[in-house]
Structure formats: structure tokens, C-alpha cells
Length: 258
Image 1 (cartoon, rainbow, N blue to C red):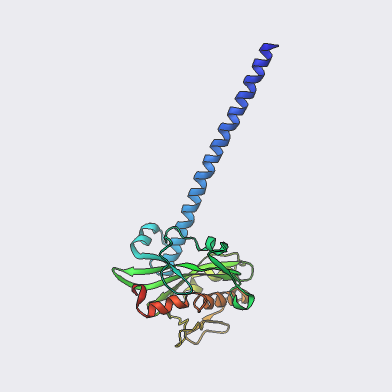
Image 2 (spheres, rainbow, N blue to C red; image 1 turned 90 degrees about the vertical axis):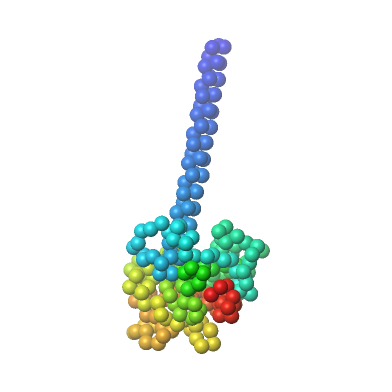
């Protein structure tokens, strides 16, 4: 009987040890995989910023982190004032997470929320595109609702803060062949040179059907009215007084090194 008990105890012990070992391996692999996923996501965001800034082309392969560090300076700003928020480290600041934190965000009323984002971080990360000591353009993160999803992207503005230098949407769930054409290089190529703030520096972008003839107009996406409206709304919102408007005013006043 004693021998049987010893055998049972050994079997259970081996099983427990094996289970613990396997769980440690799985946990370790999950941690490594999560870090890799986070690193890949960060690299993809950097790539999108570089594409918006016209530093790399969409099809180009390169060391995006190296190019980002050589050409881009990231700052965290307070949206309400346009001032640098020095209490945050730009490399670690996550605007999406901040928007979920009641202490770092505000809930938007429907009438004040044309981009349908519901909550807005009080702070945002901006990207200054540098050529030596000179800032040539500014890349701003924008997001808002289309037809089926929230679109996340970057819009790059020339130093005058009015003229589009580039655009890049890097995350969305819009309909393939319709709203998903926000990623189509031929459509994106229509944005540079468009003037999205009027003479009073108020948002003036319009996505129009049947041909864009004015400097503030861009062709709407064919067959994707809701997505087109969403893009118009989100760009105008983020360039307005409740978005990056105060920051852009500071830039025009000579702050932020532009």
C-alpha cells in the first residue's frame, strides 16, 4: 500500500511540476509576444508619421525608427492652451489611454462632438518635422468616426499651419473598396496643397462630389458618403478651437520652434 501511495504522490508531483513549467513557458511567451506586438505597433505609427510627412513613401522599406529619431521631434501639448505639457514624457504618452482616464480627459456633449469621439484627452502628442534646426512641417494625430469604425490617422501641415503637406490613415474598419479607400494612394495624393484653414484660421475643409475646384476642397470618396463626411468632420474638428487650434495659433506666433 505504501509503495502505491509513493507512486501516486510521485505521479501527482510530476504532473504539478509539469503544469507549472508549461504555464511559465506560456506566460513567458505571452509576455515576449506582447512586447513584440507593442514594438511593431509603435514602428507602424512611426512609419505612418513619416509617410504623412513625406519622408518615406508608402511602399518604401527602411529603418523607420532611425528615420523617425533623425527627423521628428515629438512633444506633448495641452490642447486647451497649446502649450507644451512638460509633465509628460513624449515617448511614453498614450493619447488613447489618456482619453479613457477621467482625470486626463473630458466627456464631449453631442453638439460639440462632430467627429463622434465621445471622450477627448486634454493632452495630445504633436510631431515637429525638422531639417537641421528648422521645423518644416507639423504632423498632428486625428481620429473620428466614419461609417463602421473610428478612423485613426495623421495630417501633416506646412509651416503656415494652413496648407496640407500629407495625410495618412493607418487604422480603421471601413468597407473595402469604398470607405477603406482612405488608404488609396491616388486619393491621398489629392491632399497636399489643399488649404484647410481659411484666412481667419478657421477649419474650412470640404469633401465634395463632382470635382474639387476650390483650394479648400478634396474629392469625396466614391460610394462612401458617410466615410467622406466622417473624414471632413474629424479633420475640421481637430484643426479647430477644441482640437489643435490653440497650438497652431502658438506656432503662428513663433512658438514651438516653427
